[in-house]
Image 1 (tube, rainbow, N blue to C red):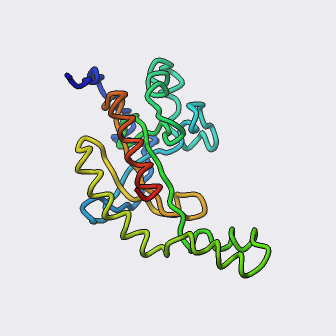
Image 2: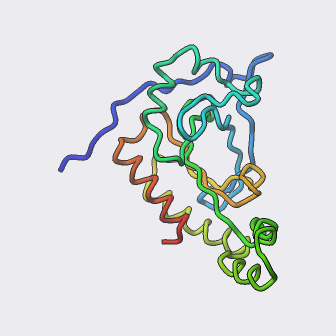
Length: 199
């Protein structure tokens, strides 16, 4: 069976990536690449919510204007979103999708579990469900190598935990506009879910 091929679309690269005076640039974050090396991702996150609606929280710090001025661009990106794992973002001046998954650890969940547990026994029992952060980090590094090999055209990293809810560990995957077919986006999403649920 012949594989579906995504129809090429010229990447929408914002002029502001040149960082001229007063231009809006994508914020920089220190990340871990599949190679294990530290690197920098320049990415404007959360331009939409998980359902494709424009997220105008702190809108003055986001490159939303091109999306608002070009409804076809926003519509096309929203149509490519998968499950509730993706957001419209801009990375290095290019609009696309960010797949994001978070991973609970003993450190990230301790206060939450303690607040919900009725006694120390229940607390200790619930905490057995989580790995220490150091162990989870090593697990994610190993799985990041595998998934990057399976999807060579996708950009992967482990983001700073400060960017995740409750300072959990996370995994990011960036794809440009129409970079993957619908079937490949489905495969990518399910591969990330497999990591998230330890398969």
